[in-house]
Amino acid sequence: MNPRIVLIGVAVAMLAVTACGGPADSQATPTADGGTSQPTTTPQVGPSRGGPLDGADPCALLTKAEAEQVTGAQSAEPVVEQLGSARVCNFSPQTARLGVGIRAKSGLAEVQSNGNVVQELMIGRHQAKQAVGATGSCGIFIGVTESSRVDVVLNSGSPDVDPCLAAMEVAELVEPRLP
Image (cartoon, rainbow, N blue to C red):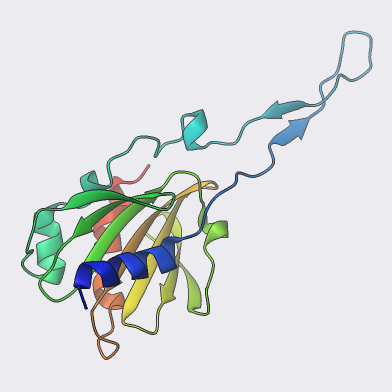
């Protein structure tokens, strides 16, 4: 089977969470006559409102040289693709598949287990989640704001190889570059 198709399938399965946006915060304000006005809404940070990941390049979060340090020689230059609501920088290691994706409209709350075990953890100063797939894949989801995150997905290509050690190394390289 074509490894690129496997990567896309794994990436879509692990990253297919779509954000619909959450409710805006509402607050009543006092008026000059002592009453209160109708509540005003304050939009949450998000890409359509100038969020910190809006327009960010996922390939700027990890260099090809850094990817090679973790996963070995790359068979091609990194390529940005749109997978669902994520902009993903796909790397092409010889024996695995690696993607670093930006979800400007989905935060950690939108990470779904899809039958995988999900652990909560901290990476640097960011809350994160880790999901391990049965097919040799590991997703590390790093929260940036309540409504945005960066996903690191590594597919080892084998259910016998633990991809989470390498995925965590990549996440630790990416995290300091996040707002």
